[in-house]
Structure formats: structure tokens, C-alpha cells
Image (cartoon, rainbow, N blue to C red; front, top):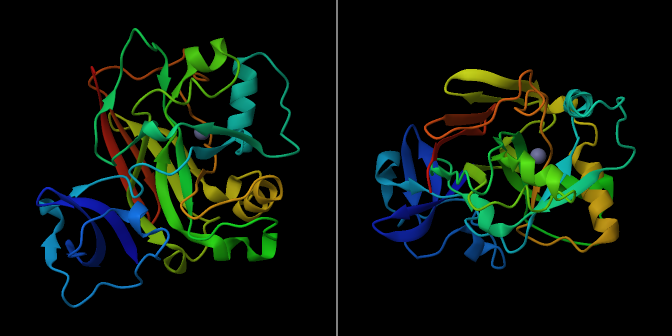
Length: 282
Ligand code: ZN
């Protein structure tokens, strides 16, 4: 099942994909974030109006997550290699997951504009990532049980201001510029994804492919990440995990490349859909 947060007739609703371009829109107001405690519906009601996709504005599935997006750094070996090479270091794969967060106000819709203020950053970079959204939290979740906590999967672009990321040492500021986390276009529920570790993912800028890989290349697979995090902190329904990006980011290219006003970034994951965002002046 695909489930989305949308705006329909100026009201936030959830919508469930029916067939071709038809979506069933919940009659009551609220986005997916409003359903985290009561439970996300498994199917559309008969009384839900059927609406063409063109009449809906797709928001991020969780337009304002309850807390920061939990992100994995260096979780693809080829990206770890290019990052360390760009900094003149030897390849060293992390022995334990590298975790940082993005502030909640970074989240924007799957087709929303990305605001780029050159006074804030001159080095805005792309990172396509598999997003994992939890339906149930917990402590000490075992690897064997971890995927039962997953509501579903989505596409995340972990846009990164490299100048801020490297200047301020800690990743947080460089990862938390307003509008730098396009997400969506919807959640594909876990039952509809055969294997989250076998999905092709790619990122293109103005139609030129920059990143192309497969989630099987992750250093730490999703169950290990959930188990590790939940040993340390209580996970909660609605937590969003961004599981790291493969090689091909801008700062590690020769010469380095960064996003400019007018660029369109497309991030796509097999079976999960695509984000398409234009970079604009704020
Ligand atoms: Zn990332």
C-alpha cells in the first residue's frame, strides 16, 4: 500500500493509492503525523472520495516529524571511500553506525522548491537515501524483530551544506539548513516491499545521473541500525531513519559540484517513487 499526506481542497488529509492515478482521500482532516498514536489505516473506507493525483498536492509523508530525522553517515562503502579520498584520508569503514540528525524544519514535500540562500551556504550537495519510518518504537529491539517496527519506506534527499558541515565540525548545522530534507512522495508500507536491502536508488541533477547504487551496498543494514539505536535511546512511532547515501555526491567529485539556482534534483528508489525538487532563491 502507498499512503501519502496531501492537501486536498485546502485541507490536509491522508490518501491511499487505489489504481493508476486515483487516490482515496480520508474524509477527516489531518496528515499522517496525526495518525501515529491512533494507528495508520490499513485500507481506504468506502466513503473516502476517489481523487486524481493531479488534484492533490503531495506533502512529505510526515510534514513535520516529531523529532529530528536520524541519519546514518558513511553507510555505503563507496561513499565512505570518496569522502575520505576527498579529504586526503585512507579508507576506513566505520565499525559502528555513524549517526547524526537533521532538524525537523528541514523537511519539505517531494516536489517543493529547495530554497538556497548563497549567504548561508555556497556548497549545497545532494544525497539520495532510503528513508525508514517506524510505526512502533521501543527499547532494546532485537535485530530479528526490528523490521516489525517499520511502517514503511520512502525516499529522502539528505541535502547537505558542505561548507557549514565541515566548518562547524559537528554535522548538525550543515545538515539542518531550512528546506534541505525533501521526503516522499509517499510511504510504501513494509508489506509491499519484498526486500528493503535490494532496491536500486539514484540521484540526477538536471537529468544527469550523479548517484546510482543499490540498498544492498549498505554497511549497516536496517535491523542492525534499529537494534543499535534502540539499545541507546527509546525509539518512537514516527521516527524517520535516513539510511545513508552511496557514492557520487558533489563535494567528492573532481572538480567539486554544488547545486545552483534553477537546478532540478531527482532522487528515485525502485518501487518507492521519485522526489523532484527545484533549487530556487529563497
Ligand atoms: Zn546522508
